[in-house]
Amino acid sequence: MTMFQELRNQQRDLLEQLDELEEAVMELTALLENAVAEDDEFDDRHERLAWLHRQHAGVLVVLGETERALLAFGEF
Image (cartoon, rainbow, N blue to C red; front, side, top):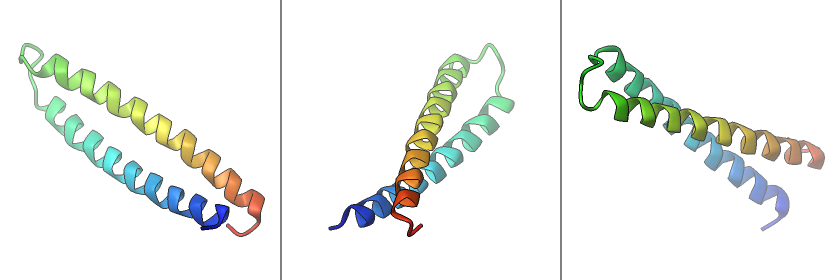
């Protein structure tokens, strides 16, 4: 497989991960909006949301680098 094709595959995988992360963030945000601060799971959900935001940021960074590499090939 060519490097270009590997980058395209990586881009597709990253976009899928991004969609999954965004969906998880929306679901967790909805749960937190309805949660009470004293709820036992409140802190856990906030920690999970923070983790999801970090994962989201990481995927965006890698996706940006992948797209830059694809642009270097001039075929994006």
